[in-house]
Length: 257
Image (cartoon, rainbow, N blue to C red; front, top):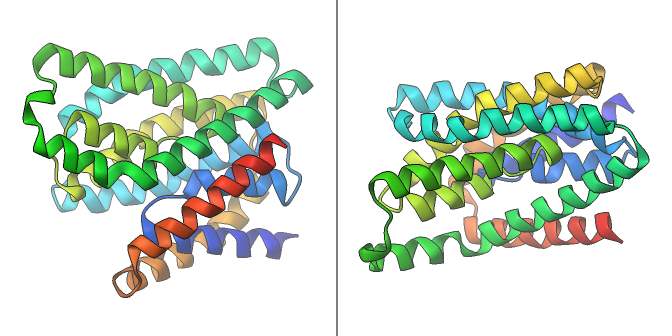
């Protein structure tokens, strides 16, 4: 079984390296559906996995100056308290109860579909916003919307481990359409580090992290991400994102039915 986990980590890492998205959206459903791991454990383990991998990504983006720390602070103002409150609610209602397990499964499915929408329409949305600068938020309204987005992402990520990638990047496109793609990626990864770390700590407190599983996934994902990143320029991003969208839609339907 450990070999299967390493292979799964490699496959997900390869897709993340090629497309930049899909880590949580693929890993959590994969652990739940293919390996029969309890949804709470799958979510907790994936959050620990994400906090470690995203830390490395943040260091790389910081060295290139592609992190907007002012936006990271605003997102964190909403996301971090939301993650703590959601963890306390999970503790109160019982993170491994059958009822909450069903809620987590549906939350994962909903988060996966949000990721699909983000994959398919992010570029069109960015083009429309660039063509209509009068629609851009400014000042306090922009700050408030950013904090509110952080609350949404913090709740979503803590429950399902999904949302900090493609969904977070799409929200950044909507709120800050003048950011370059590199700044969107760097900012999205940077705010997700403290969010996934706090959420992962909360799941550790709840007892829903499998450390042996985490080690096996990391063992496979590190070379996978490296290989995918090196090969990304030679593969059609549009094709890969289309395949990823189809795969994620199938996963969401399987989780529901």
